[in-house]
Amino acid sequence: MSIKLIRYSPWLVHFNTGACNGCDIEVLAALTPHYDPERFGIRLAPSIRHGDILIVTGAITKKAAIRLRRLYEQMPSPKFVVAVGACAYDGGVFKDSYSLRRGAREVVPVDIYIPGCPPRPEAILHGIVKLLQKIEKLSEVGSR
Amino acid sequence: MSLWSEILKNVFKKPVTIEYPKVKTPIEKDFRGLQYADLNKCNGCSLCAIECPSKAIEMRKLPEDIKLKHNPRGLYPVINYPSCVFCYRCVTICPVNAYITKNEYRLATETEKLLSDTLSLQTLKSGGA
Amino acid sequence: MTEARSSELDPKQVLGNLVIREEFVKPSRRVFVVDKSVIREAITRLLKTYGETSIYISTIAGVDRFEQGVIEVNYFISILPRKEVIVLRTQLSRAEPVIDTLIDIVPGVFAGENETYDLLGVQFNGNNTLKRGFFVPEDVVGKGVYPLRKDAKW
Image (cartoon, rainbow over the protein chains, first blue to last red):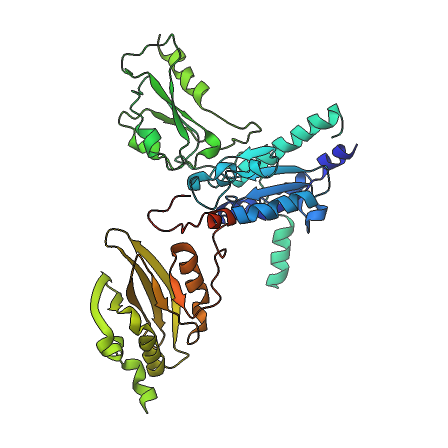
């Protein structure tokens, strides 16, 4: 029952763990009226306690991984995570650096990856629509 | 007076939203999208795997029953798309121009790896033997 | 009376006999090599000539020259009335890189000196705010590695 309510109106929270800000600009451009995500019921949440979907951009540094884990544990369940960009998948071009973890899946469980450097706003919307279809399949099986 | 004409003009204009799944957004012709190797031309030199800045290309051996005359080592490149930054250095450095480039950018995935091996092996079937 | 004319003074004339030689990097950037023991004297002379509010230290860049066996510390100084940026270059030996601090005359070098200590291992005499975990994460600090040196492994 609780997952069905999320499918109709998920609220997003966006967190940047040491990125170059390229993926942030594209994520914020996907939330403007030009591409209009409010047709799917999506809006930006004011705080983490009101959020349903966490969007992670940037190469995950070791110092930011502690704060990301704390944010994920403060979100109320049911919750989902989307990793945007090549850096959030496994570090991108900075794979063998002294201050990075190897991708977001070492810290939080990720549901959808969106490739690109940076991905277009249409590609980000396509990824979020895929996540909503996955939630629809889950709510038919049973709640988490 | 000009204020009223502005108000009247904007009341009857259409909204500026691009309704994404129904309407395709205009993309320029040389947009850097999906790329994969054409096995009819690739000769297994591995220059693209050496050049890739984020090490997204891995060379794999061809399946057992395929023997190609222009590929004596029997290797072909496999790209892992979530790691790729689409810089197209592999396309530029290939000495035989063996890469096919497309405009496709909708690549979101749930699985951990998204590989290009099926796309590359399909170029052999429709082409020749 | 000297205040009206101090902005026309060339920095090379101000530094005078402290400059060992001048090097060329690119056409609009002048690089002066000074000895590491006179760096406080040079900065004090520049501050007195141009005034305390028309000069500031942009950044401190440390370079590890492995083949020559020196560590270079470059001070980028921006002189506002002449609209130019000059560079003071000092060279320290790689086995024992120690230099005097500038934090009591110019408090703005706090971030530059901390970063050079944390990433390259250069000691600044008289600065008691230096500590290891400023930029480098904890497990690399635990191995005792300075990451920007050319022979560092983590």
